[in-house]
Length: 436
Image 1 (cartoon, one colour):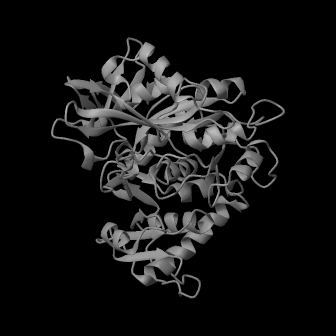
Image 2 (cartoon, rainbow, N blue to C red):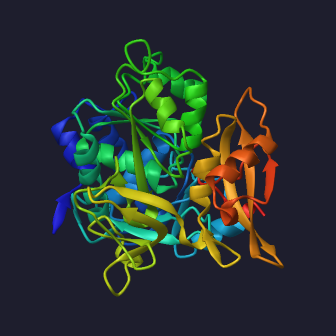
């Protein structure tokens, strides 16, 4: 089955509507078609992989859609990756587009073949996982994966014609790319920031950035939402008046964060997702309408549906997420942690996320990370690194007393260290293996 090119369709339906800030869909299509000819001249071809190592912004968006327009497979990579890692991830690519690529003086090739339709089963983009538990893995995502993901998201969150989705996430990860793809599919506006700038994001959300326009959705990770709330993010007519949702994912949500957002009048839609499932799996507690979630006998979450990359599906038809969780009688999903992160201390299983939630209920704790260290007697001992909340003094002895009343003996951290920050990836995920 084939679907129309999303950029071509959007330009036909809404030629004067903003695709990006200051760029209409008609203008974007013209830039995409011109760039497609230049990329063809450089060797880009249908079905071939092309590395896209550009910072977020208009140029990234144009090159991405130009690659899709000719049927090439885009492989977005962080421009800051070390050369050796970039070569490893782009080993099968025939071309790389980065800051040194001179597209401006490259003459468009008149022989270029631009596609007006795409096969749903054809690979559009290869994303890489965050690499939090090892080497980053390439995940091929098809046009069908992206389409169903966009439909599922729109069903869960709504998608009015005047949607303006703010993206200040890296575009080499599925969370940021999803904003671009959903916007193109729905012919709505993506407001792309080149880098994270909390003050700029706050200005956009509070309507103080005229060019950005009235932001209706923003994608954030827990760390950035916390920073924005601390900086004064508020909902309602005196704050983020047009904001429908903060789509919050990418990492475990600390205890108290949702309550703080609610007190500030900020509407939050927690989401659980993976690169292998083209971003969202469950949003606002429930799986997307096109997604099925089940649990294995050991509690591992299993996922299947048209958003899931075929390359990630096992022989039984399920994506094994590596996450532990449960589904209640209402069909709501609760994630309890990573299977690989489970600490075995004295023969007892300890789920770090469950311990972190108890620790983070203390108002003096901004963030907590629980991990295991080898122990001669217990096999592993439970350890914790904590970040104190701004303007507070964290009393470790008092915290230990509270944890003794709320946690089983085998769950209690034997070592507690206060640190300035926890190690995270560029997409906001905790690098648990770096806690040491």
